[in-house]
Length: 113
Image 1 (cartoon, helix red, strand yellow):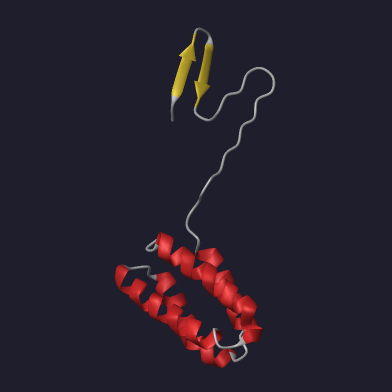
Image 2 (cartoon, helix red, strand yellow):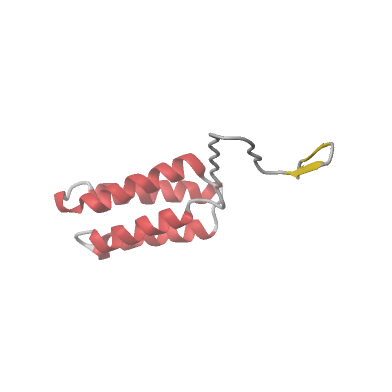
């Protein structure tokens, strides 16, 4: 942790604000986005017109999340492609398709977590 000393003041890390009209913002990113992915998978399960048809791909993704290796990244991509083809042809699955898009974006940007 950073420490700064100025005469009789000592500051330990973080942001220090002195005076008027200061704005401090901080964003912390802890862990990864697995919760977002599992929430999206739950949405797909709940909203897919034929939940049994999408279950095999969902299981593949869940197993890959437990062990996010480069090899499993390929399996996830195949499962996402399979989900896309199963959901993309059904108009009423808009919420599931939106969740699929979020999952695909997270996997593309951050795999392996």
